[in-house]
Image 1 (cartoon, rainbow, N blue to C red):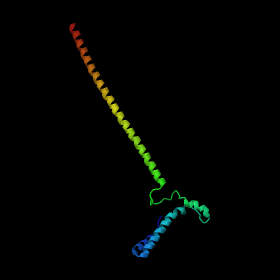
Image 2: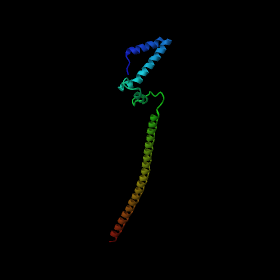
Image 3: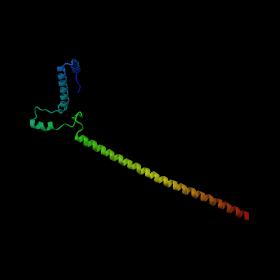
Image 4: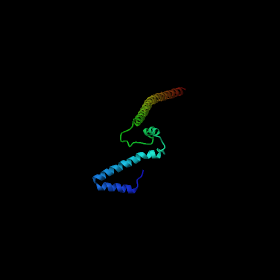
Length: 148
């Protein structure tokens, strides 16, 4: 909602006057502006109150429109608090699940590292045994050729 420049000039003039009656006028202007801001959603709702009966208008007056929001002067509503807490709990659950997945991955890496080290050791043993067998075979070949 935008106010005309004349309104702002008048408001600044009222502030500059600094007289007791100017404070009351300023307060009245602020209340009027607040009422206009609060009344604007009802005006936008296209409701013709002159044709509505008082009984029909009462339930609508008690129900706050979905688009009307308080400026947070009284803290969050119960619905907002419940939604925030549910969102935080959902985030906590997701964080716990991700932490569990990270822990599982770390355990898997540790286990697989152990397997790789064990296979590396066995491969070294097999290579050294092949080297010994090759040397033994070469020695036997040499001794057999020397005997002939």
